[in-house]
Length: 280
Ligand SMILES: O=C(O)CCC(=O)C(=O)O
Ligand SMILES: [Fe+2]
Image (tube, rainbow, N blue to C red; front, side, top):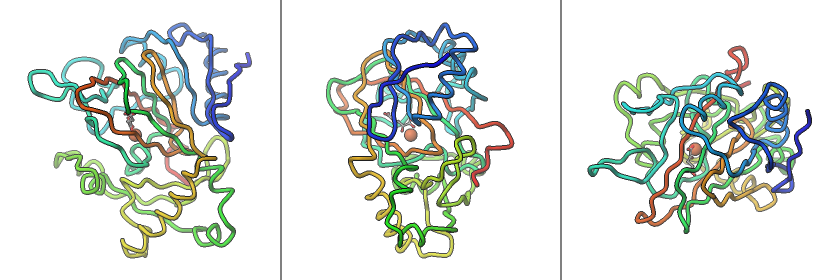
């Protein structure tokens, strides 16, 4: 079964209409997997998924992860709430209303998350757009000198770096479960075979063997190149949208939004098959 996706950006991002993610058969699941690989980011609208339905869909795509920072005591542990909402003065989810800089989810793990899905339950009329950039196409379009320079480089990532840069606090137990991870700065996609830049402005502490200042200069140069308008798609959310992205081929960021607008997203992370999890 072929699934047609409308391209939302020149090189990546597909929008798929007419699919009910709560009723997929195996042929439709395979078509979604193929479209996801081809488009790197998939956008679905008008979905009706409770937490069980979201986890069921995620399980069709791969092994579902429990997020390092998961702290829920009610609801499905596979589902992380991304929200600025509070109950009894306490945040019900993560990441508040602030801007999130260009990043890659869980790049700091030895076996980072392959893909993330975000499902919009409550959206804001202003701000809160989520932006994606195509790191594969950006890599192939690098100026030759820069491409030669990054060849063979390895980058060091840690959750503690994100704590420092973004102010997300880790518990001691979480810190021990996620020490530094070192991955190639240019990663070959384990399923698509495409080479892509592989770093995160929030989590990449440094390039192995370089000072932090020099590393940040290089990362910023790569970030400026990779987030030029021709490599970027910005998603403006509607209730019922589900966006699924490939963490081995894209980075994302989020616009801030006014805190008096409640925003609630349900989020699930998926792994690659066990033998393909470590980046190479
Ligand atoms: O809230 C968003 O739009 C994006 C949050 C994010 O970066 C994530 O859930 O990984
Ligand atoms: Fe993220």
